Length: 323
Ligand code: NAP
Ligand code: G4F
Image (cartoon, rainbow, N blue to C red; front, side, top):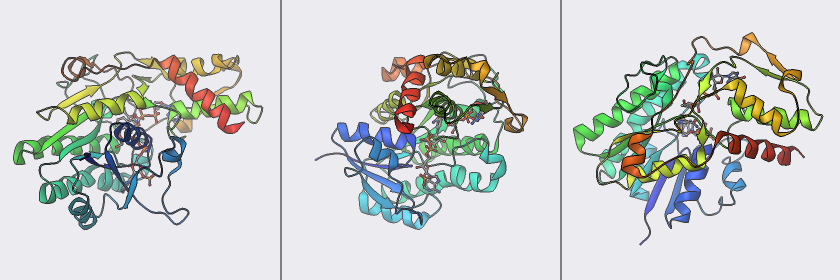
């Protein structure tokens, strides 16, 4: 009998790569997705990976507890991966209430559905390095205190502690992955890496001339989504549920990440980059740098893809898409 997984956020970047990984391991993959009026469900990313027909889409929303309970009863998953969220930090100042409802309280809904209908299911919560915010240690690990700097990060902190609490209160096998930034050709266009690689491709093809960015001094620990979904899966294969930092252990400025993209196509960044004050955030996370030692020692996981490899892969994918 193949194992069954339920993935929320299946239409997102990580949902697509995780579904691909689980299918390759022989899982029956069910993906929770919300319908929209423009297309029944947006399967673009699953389509890109050629797996849209292999995933069983379940109509649902993290805000709808009764639907989640019904889904849990019908699917009876062995593993639940909660990836759904309002995940764009900048939007969380514009839509703080929605962000709190989905990214924070949505975790309560899915954990309640698990507790009521499938308490033996293993649960993964997509926590975030944004929770470290105004960093309290140069390198952030599982024991570093949190200091969230956006409504998104505050909401993620709620989801993180609720996952810990359901593990301790009800004995659920509930793990929280504190993942640092991870990207890919399937990254949403609003996030800085993809915005850069898409713009560089447009400039190279002569259909744009400038790239407008905000704070290019910010530093991030960037890895590849394809590598990071493996860590999610590994967490749910452990006898004991726990919390893990998933990161590369290297940090780079937005400026240097951007330079890699321009240099890959033989263009000079300074000829095209414009700093736009409107793109700065009300409160910034200046630097993130993760310590993945625990994930390496306990899960046997480590990042495989360098930033250069990933950014050049993303530029090439955008050139192909646009060409
Ligand atoms: P993403 O591409 O933005 O995907 C988010 C997913 O959540 C989409 O499938 C979206 O569906 C779904 N969603 C949003 N609101 C929903 C709702 N009310 N009900 C059901 N589904 C809903 O994000 P990602 O990069 O794959 O990240 C996956 C998770 O990891 C997120 O929770 C994110 O916050 C977290 N995380 C990401 C990173 C990173 O660097 N990528 C780092 C740490 C943590 P639609 O397609 O319908 O919008
Ligand atoms: O790519 P970003 O929007 O990602 P951010 O805010 O770090 O959040 C991402 O990673 C988190 C993990 O740490 C996830 F939890 C979250 O869901 C999301 O996936 O911005 C990265 C940095 C920021 O410092 C931002 O101020 O890039 C800076 N930046 C500079 N100019 C820009 C821009 N970011 C965006 N999106 N657009 C710009 O024009």
